[in-house]
Image 1 (cartoon, helix red, strand yellow):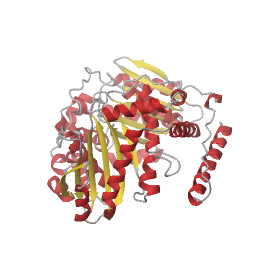
Image 2 (tube, rainbow, N blue to C red):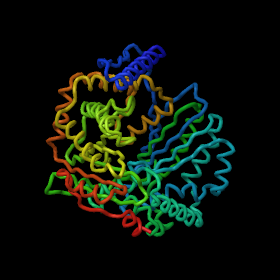
Image 3 (cartoon, rainbow, N blue to C red):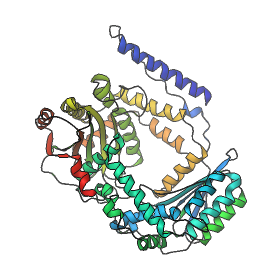
Image 4 (tube, rainbow, N blue to C red):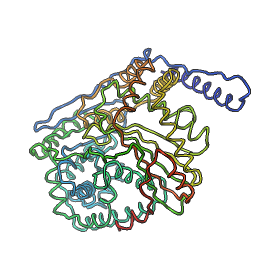
Amino acid sequence: MKKNLTLFILSCSFFTNSFAQDSLQSKRPSVVVKPLQLDWRSIKWPSVNYTRTPVDGGAAIYSLHSTSALKFKLTFIFPGGVYTFPQVERTAFGAFADLITLGGFGDLNFDQIQNYTTEYGINIRTSVTPYGQFVITADALSQDFPRLLALINNMVLKPKFEKNALDLWKQQAIDSFKNLIDSNTLDKQFRFVDLEATALAFGKDHYIAKAIERSSPSVVNKVTYDQIKNIYAKTITRNGLNVSISGSFSQKDFDSLRQFIGKIPYLEPSIKTWYPSRKMNESNSKKIRTEIITKPDMTQCNISLRYYYPKLGKLNSIETTQFDLLEEIFSSTGGVIGNDRFSKAMRADSGISYSPHAYFNDTLLFPNTDVGVFNLNFQSPNERLAEAIKLATQTWNKFIKDGISQDELDNSRTSLINRMLASESTVFNKSDEIMSQVIKGQLPSVNPIEFTLAKLEKQHYANALNETLKKLSSSEIVPVLVIMGNPNAEQINLLKKIDELDLIGVKDLTSLTKPLL
């Protein structure tokens, strides 16, 4: 493995230096150096030997042991979740996930819990997954297993939900919301860009498009303890519960975990009653629906250009691998800036955008299916906005129309394979991957890296990937573009002259945030 890693570093270094020298010394003849693909077949891949242990009542424990680890990690993924309750309960569901600890449990209030966990180096976190399930994750040193399990026992079976904790949660939530609407960082600004892009594609009342509204003071203040206790009573069940234990633990620890799970109430199956709608806004035109959000203090624009495919369908394993390669060719997740199509156009050649990045997402509405999106995010100086938009759309159109070259496929395939070989997963990473597959209803693979490498290497022919790209170009498409920045009137007029765009609105950021306060 060390030999392979050394070859990888040397090959990458040689490739990078060659690229830099060719760029700086353009008078010299150009020499194309292909990266060297490492021999992944020479590696003896250890299996991820997890064990699934059923617990009466519909629960299961996935265990992955490590003799070298000093810690252990527990993950509880409860069934049902957000989609088993009405949409109006979403904010209350988030409150429940926080208040199960913030409200205290057992004989301890929140401050006492914090002091106790700090003293023993115990971490306990609660959250709601992107797919809507309530999750508890915890880790500690192996000798502290009994302490941690006792805490989780009280959290799950004996939450206190102290009355003053709800008021505290509301104040923290409102403070967090006010911090968000300042929009003084890139991440905050893209939250609003994302919401407006979703509204353009799916409608302003779509579940995803109302994410910020759900965290607004008017909605937060309506959350009641009755809602939270009702959610708790219907969420905490072992019928469909999946638990992961990984790292260093004893048989005694495992047995005590199984006994605890047996104490969790058994309820009827949690059935989802709705999914995020996949119905998209219909347009009589193929033009890109465009919106500008003005923010006077911004010197550059943050831009999201999205091509939605409402009838993409669920991808098979071959298509998934092909889209991984196409995504890498269009916008690489590693390597030299300018080696991929998007950063070459938006950064290396034009100098417009510092961090252009594009990615493909076919699980946008999971657990619903069918809709996929290619998302192109980039920045532009206010005064070069029209130029940046033209360049981004031209780069995408050329990619879709002309396809990829054999060299691009070979280089990207090699890059992805070598990058996987240069990375190392811990037992906790492997456990997380197992649970991510379980959440999606998939059977966890015992040798996922080897299978992924083999699938990548099977993609030898550019023509096959170009056929997949042709399916995109011939599929139904809903393109949208959202810009946040401070472009002047001249730039806005130039945007109006771009044939591909349909500028449907220019609004100030305060028009989005003020109604929510």
